[in-house]
Length: 191
Figure (cartoon, rainbow, N blue to C red):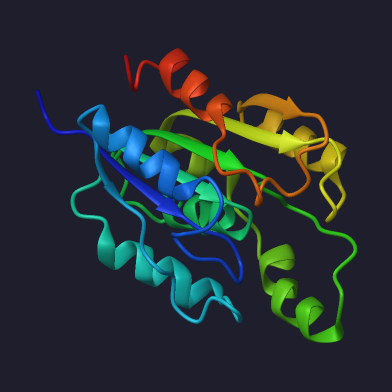
């Protein structure tokens, strides 16, 4: 049986040491999954080309034993990477934590400038869907960046299984997120 590989992509301004990422990495590794949780480049000023290119350079031979987990802008990075895979390539699953297609309440003109391309450059739903077998999203009802209902509807349009959490904020302060293990178990990724 081929080795399972997971890639965890942190969010804007984040790192692989943030919140639940170290816990998830350790937990998946204990289940025999090879996990990469890289520090994304220029994390304070994420750019689509830079982040997607970086992820593309890391992932070797994506296949049905390849899984992606993203937080916030990391979810967008994963979706944009998956949509550019060669025709016929299928990955096992993608799990999105506090993922978004729209944002509110950005705190500065600089943040709005950085976010604009991520909000305006389309994600090609059909291309994305053609490459991924299963998708799930964990979204908090009180995400401070708003648009939760709109983002949930967009994920549903992609056929994504949604788990909502009450009072989770942007899901960036939790040291553990056991809902992720439940989802991985339901998807058959871990036993």
